[in-house]
Length: 381
Image 1 (cartoon, helix red, strand yellow):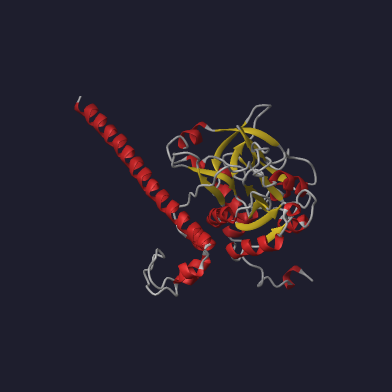
Image 2 (cartoon, rainbow, N blue to C red):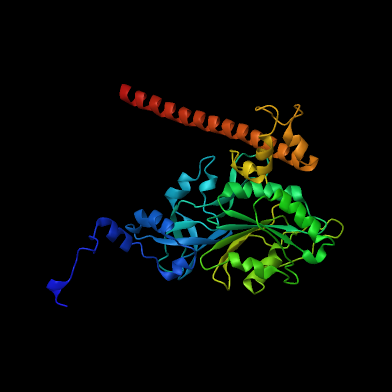
């Protein structure tokens, strides 16, 4: 066919959008680390600064990042460090799983992080102690394995708490009941957990023997990120070693008598699995205090409460002893108390967050007024 016989009518025009998409082609090394069009678009403003995208793969005092081709230890730029100095800005500090705009080192020195790209998800908790600050445990996770032991430390109420935080994260929660080899009545435990983990897949496995662990590899497809979360001693390190096909994490026996564990994972780290997935292992959490100040996590974890509440006699029923309360009649005392406890904790957190916001605004105004007074003095000279 000659050139003058070709029909060009079905060929779309080469618009600016076409060329923009053409520049967002993602190298295979980055897609292997979970880099998607979402992060590529967010990184575009930094490309002209000769920065490169990288993912935070470890947090062990120092930050370790990977560009897909090389790993570097990294420091924050002076500007970014200054931006993260103020109270309440700790959640912006790079966490394992974050994507950052990076300037690689010229030689053997450290790389420099200039910005943290927007997150698609983040699993957070309130920092331990009395400070009202957010701690990001893992970022940009697609799926969260909430690991619980089926031994003497088995606790459905703790699973409810983890589910509440997981729903708030933006990732898909999966409950993993580990130590199947230590449980005398796994069916009863499964039914009990399924009753509180409404709409959430529940897997019973034994990381020690490998029983049913292959079910979990389905969540670790190429470029998919899974976070392992749970209390100390639930077997996260053993499960991590199984999913990685090698002994990447140290393991230790739990204490006799109460099956409570000791910290064997001492830092957060991202690993590539044989299936091409990405696994973030984290130290065991001694406590998990809620951080998010809204109701989404609780409403998702306690969907049965919302459904039962529609049948309460009074539309404004608080489920605190009112006559005709369908919630009190329909829930077990343990689940009802767990719901009330999380509601109280969320309310107290909301009060503290409001107080913190008020103090920060007061400090900001004080600094602003001080600057205005100094300017007035300079003008009067």
